[in-house]
Image 1 (cartoon, helix red, strand yellow):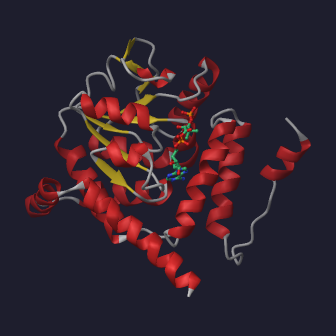
Image 2 (image 1 turned 90 degrees about the vertical axis):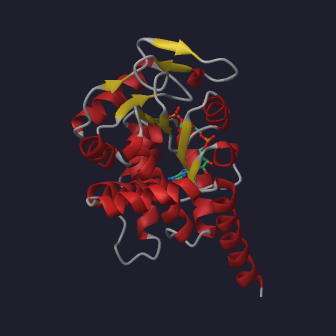
Image 3 (image 1 turned 180 degrees about the horizontal axis):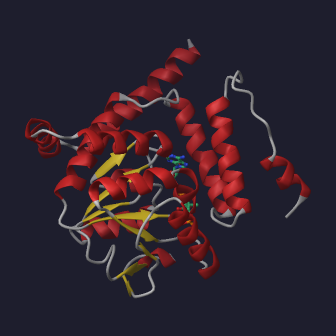
Amino acid sequence: MSDELTRAQAIMVSKEHPRYASLILRNKLVEGYQRGIASAHGLIAHGRGEAFDYLLGEQTSESACNATKVACAHLLTARCAVLSVNGNTATLVPDEIAELQEIIGIAVEINLFHPSAQRTKRIADHLRDHGVANVLTGFDFVKLAHIASDRANVDKKGIFKADVVFAPLEDGDRAQVLTELGKTVMTVDLNPLSRTAVTSTVTIVDEVTRALKNLVSLADHVGSDGQRKELNLLKASFDNQENLKASYAIMLKQLRDLSR
Ligand code: PTJ
């Protein structure tokens, strides 16, 4: 491990710092990288996400809220829902993954873009330490056609048999193929222009830690039949492309306001 990375992990962030939340996430991710959970590429991907979050005002929009409600409705009505976890997601939201599993019984599968047996094991151990049960690791897998990366290898007991696949920070290839296979694909992606965002059934354009906290809270509080009915009505009328337009509009407004 280089000295530079050791120092990066040790960065102290004052709560008064205007970019406190963002710096804490960076620290978390650097630590995840140093522990062999996130990949080096994951650090770069996070930076891309940050740039889009900046344009979104670093807050959850109304359209992201709507998409989160629709995602919750899909999860609650799924025959078999699976959460696909990569290095970044495992690093940033392990507790929320455990909570979501406890509330709705979602299966959890590790599926990596930059796979290695070592990293898969570290992620599985990390998730178990945070209370996630029965982590699927693709040991018994099927290779899906038309996916150029190793993410094509999906667990027979997980993504392969799922009707609803929730894959935060996904890559476009797989989202498209899973949708074509008739599965409901839901993602969290700060980039509303990405192929993943455009080809998924439900795209939550929000930062993954904010989105997962909101989703857990929603799932935990959906109690009455009336509330479930309201979520299902939203699900029935949801149009992902229309919802994405609201994110483009927020970004355009932000840029217009700044350039005045
Ligand atoms: O752990 P691995 O090997 O599976 O690799 C994971 C990454 C994320 C590196 C891999 O899936 C990848 O390269 O993803 P992409 O194609 O860069 O896409 C990631 C998307 O997530 C981008 O559109 C980013 O804008 C977005 N993103 C990054 N960080 C966040 C985010 N969206 C929400 N919250 C974030 N914190």
